[in-house]
Amino acid sequence: TDHHDTMSPSRHPWPLARRFRRFLIFLALGPWRSFVGCLPGTPKPSPRVRRASRSEATPGTRVRVGISYEFEDDGYPEDVDFNPALEFVCGRGDVVPQIDQGVEGLKIGDQRFIQCDEKNPLFGFHDASKQILVPFADYSDAKLGAVISLVKHGGLTGVVLKQQKDQWLVDLNHPLAGQRVNVTITLLATEAVRAREVHVKRLRNGDGVTYPIFGDWITMHVELSHNGKVLSSTRAGTPLRYHLGFEDSKDRGLELGLQQVSLGELASIQVPAPLAYGAQGCDEKQIPPHADLVYKVDILDVESELELAF
Image (tube, rainbow, N blue to C red; front, side):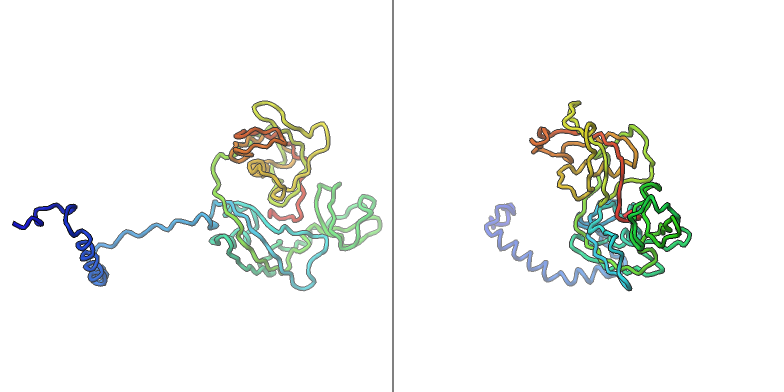
């Protein structure tokens, strides 16, 4: 009797040789297996589901996008500043459609050129009816062609067209409305948006319209507390002027919460430790490690370089 035939495969004295023979057979049959798969009636393998990469901009993903601008004709007014980067949730309508749709499908480091002509203007169509007269005395420092903030007229921004006796004629359109502008966008970062990561409780209604976005300047009173103990407050002094997205702040949760609080609103922003100062805490602000924080914010003013939600 051949003892090798009665031995289990795991105890075969030449397991490597057997495996090698099987490997050679697999290679030899490979092309025929592909051929058989093409025959009628052959079951097809289930298609693989394509899952978006974490680094890809997909609807519902929070993205950070760098932007460079190219202007035709006479360029752009010197008084107009442009955000070098934007942060928004892809596909939610937070920014103009050209940018929102243009970033989709990009991966970190990818760039896309977007051409915006008169039929698809980046800064909106020019509306000839959007002109108002304001007292010259209220804005005596204004100059023709300058972009001014109409503090005494609802905080609107406009371009001074001309002087009519004791009044300024101001165009409320964006200074680049209707003009050709080309942009190149670069996807810098992506982040999954998790539900209920920051809780915002409204204590007093705001205008419900003017919400801070990435790049805006926010003037506000802020009270920071932990476990009911107030750690700092601006109430007794000067309000804080905060550049959303550009401050050297490790409190990611505060910035997420501020974007949910409108002008004039008083709100409480509850930030879990992982989105605040995490395991490190912050000795300078008396914040212990793993501390959940509460920010009580009163939004006094929101200043944007651009009139678009951008």
